[in-house]
Image (cartoon, rainbow, N blue to C red; front, side, top):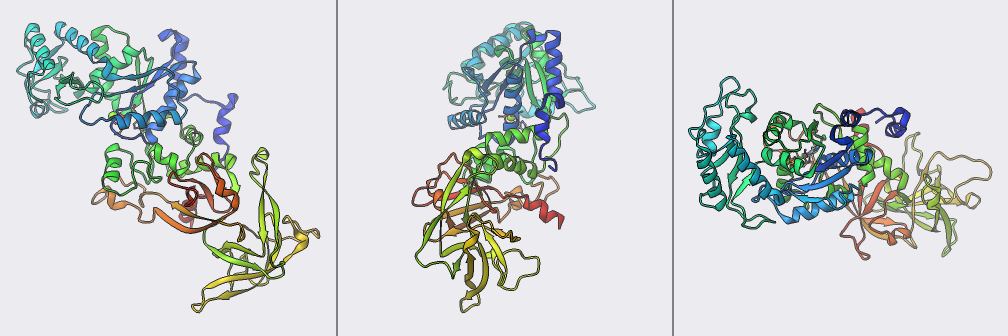
Length: 568
Ligand code: ATP
Ligand code: MG
């Protein structure tokens, strides 16, 4: 994003343009459709952890409810017992709450509607609109036809209502094995829309459901169940992703046949991000294959991973606002997400000094044994965050690459003869360095100007470089984990790629640095705090950090290092 303020401008009422879903809602409200109510939902299947794509859907649905004084439901679409688990239910609740989407007392489970759905199915059978079919899944697929040829009607299509009612009841009672029969809608085997060629409504599954136990032997298919769930809950705008566009006629057909309350399905483009995979199946493979350290590995695009990495809910909202809501699929550059978190953290992160690759800086003319206290600003973007004290003495730590023995002219950091500012402290002039037997620099020496306390020269003398430092008398040791993109190619999912997507993992996506020197104040960091290590990046405590073993995760570097590389 070149214009940092784009989304803030979008907040201003005069500049605000409605996205297409807002337009639909406003039109519906103006016409009095749904009694000018707005009621949305987020309907995850509890078969995995949520990812940033889901975050987009949660933020969209909950913000539509908030914007139009409506309501937002969290509904688990738990219709597939073999893939679902309570572990996922709990993590999803935590993630939705963390994002700030408020379902109040409206937490629902599709499985609680199974009885009602069954009644509706019986009604369709009685209307002659559904039948029990004995074809196997393979046979159903084989008789579906092609885009140019109609499907072949099932030999069971014309069973009598009585026989269908009897067989359907016996399917429910568990009389038949998995796959022996299905209940199918009787629509149109010649429809140009495959979804209308007698779709399956129920299948037989003998499995234990995480909420219903062994009560059910038949389970509803998504297309049948979803519209009913929306209808039962009084949803007005059922927002889903684009791949369901061709399912909408079926969504409508079921509700129309039953003559029940009928929400409006609206499709939008799903979020895709470069350098990322998003499908739950692939994320599960990364976890199961130990390519990452669990679902909440800070490199994962999961909400829990982003949270552990130090992302904020506000950053994800900024991101969603920036990318907008579209009708056409596209792939968003990962840099847009990184910029969103920079934008948010720039406002709220407390500034601290930390040295990732330390060497000693010795101030030869500073009194031996003296320690003084200097004042540092916590956040120049927010004066309310105030100041803190940092200690200063004869021996400091600085970054190894802030010194160069033979430096080019444009090198504004420490090199013999050059004066720089130590942040919040003094001007120092580099004099020399000490090397070990391999020629590696082990110490840098300098002299300081006592008149420049606080980093200002009374004679107006200017320096071109300012570097950060940590005082050796009070430094705290820590580990820093520097994360980079999980994949080294922009489209790890691309069908054109050879091999499997895990071949494209970035081998340098995690760099652990164990000898980091932190200023004292960071010893008291708490898990909910965000920090900017000056000149280094944004950091937050890792969940495994302890007082004796501090671990900081880098959320994001200060600037977009990838775009710099690309421009070179
Ligand atoms: P996956 O395809 O990764 O397995 P899913 O779509 O099957 O995910 P669900 O639990 O069915 O996962 O999704 C819940 C909701 O989240 C759905 O309404 C779906 O449209 C939405 N959603 C899922 N992925 C994305 C995405 N990438 N962008 C926007 N919305 C998404
Ligand atoms: Mg799904």
